[in-house]
Figure 1 (spheres, one colour):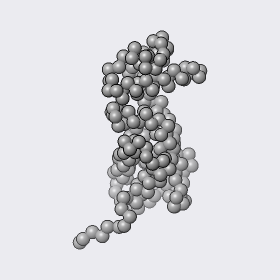
Figure 2 (cartoon, rainbow, N blue to C red):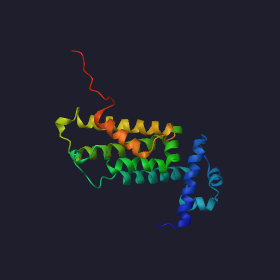
Figure 3 (tube, rainbow, N blue to C red):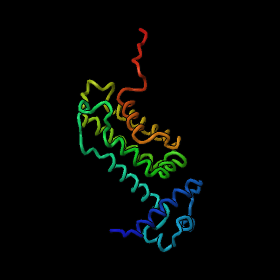
Figure 4 (tube, rainbow, N blue to C red):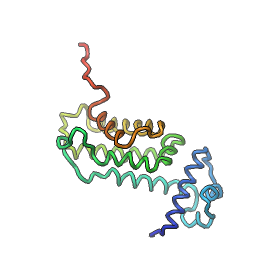
Length: 198
């Protein structure tokens, strides 16, 4: 069903109202409190959702579908074809997407962590990273551990880096975060190679 501009606006208001109430630790929010916060009528609420749970799931779906679109690898390149300061476009889009939806990520990842959302968010990151290993054609002998281990390790680094960024009020711009995360993912955190004692 195609929505008109007014309906889209009502849904955005309800999504924002849900996040605002959740931020206040109002976990058992009512339809009345949502309508008051969004400044819409109950009949308008019922046009879109039967209850707050359906609203929650639709908010998740909307965010995650946008995230998937950002992380779709459309122009695959070998790792050797990237310049020293060149970013895969998806890395930049990931952080731009989070900035555009900062309130949602602040609430669902940091202030009132939503386990269901976090699980789906992580699954999308895992798929993106796994696809990235495939499309950049890194030979297996150049990967330091079992592929699935590396993919989960990098996904964990993405999750924690994004959380850190949000907790610090997105103090760096999207380009900095994307480039730094890519650099750390490929080369680790140390500028010099550690010489281990034998």
